[in-house]
Image (cartoon, rainbow over all chains, first blue to last red; front, side, top):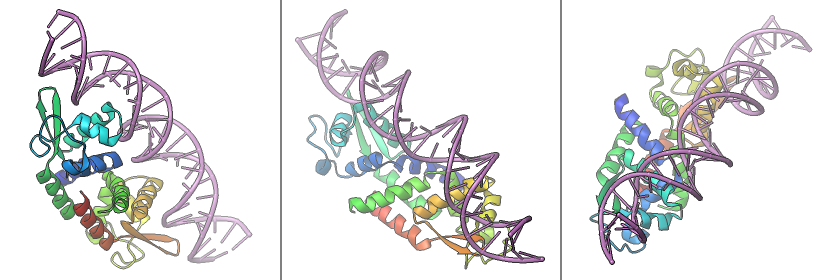
Length: 106
Length: 106
DNA sequence: TAGCTAAATAGCGATATCTCTATCTAGACG
DNA sequence: CGTCTAGATAGAGATATCGCTATTTAGCTA
């Protein structure tokens, strides 16, 4: 385990050190089961748009947007812009990779 | 994965969301390889005492003590008091348990 | 173009975290 | 008992984080 990888992990760990972001990341694992219906876009194709996540989280739009930005910067979710909507989706491969490197590093 | 377990994990994640604590926890994986000689106590039996960790970390004694407290409260290290020395040791079982529940929860 | 909607950014106050110095507590020992 | 050492605790200053409201940006549509 190199120090470089560890530093990457440290950023991801900081991203996960928040109940709100932990919740969002878990909800994104099963969008259909965790979010209300989405007028535009398919949960499993495009992802979940911000306002839908906001409704579930019960936080202001800017706060949700900030959490999503942190999750995105940590590489845990992908972002896809379609028209005026921004769809966020778990990056399952990245999550798995993080868990694997953490298991090796810790 | 219950919410209770997730909350426990959240505390551990906060404990790990610090480069200094991540370093200390890694160093404790191989005390002989990462720390200078210890006058009193066996690394693999009693653990590593605070002043030895302090020398490696290059931080003040109270700061190191605070980090160790957080790691201990998160359940990642055990503490053993012998005379005037406090020995800290990785709780390998707890670390593994955390990684397993995180893998299941995330 | 004007107006509407979705989401990001700016900026702010409250709280938490990180590190330090100073002090306190506890044990060892003359 | 006084003194030394090991480490915890208290308290302060600097920075980071969290949540908010207000505003800006970008896309859509009449």
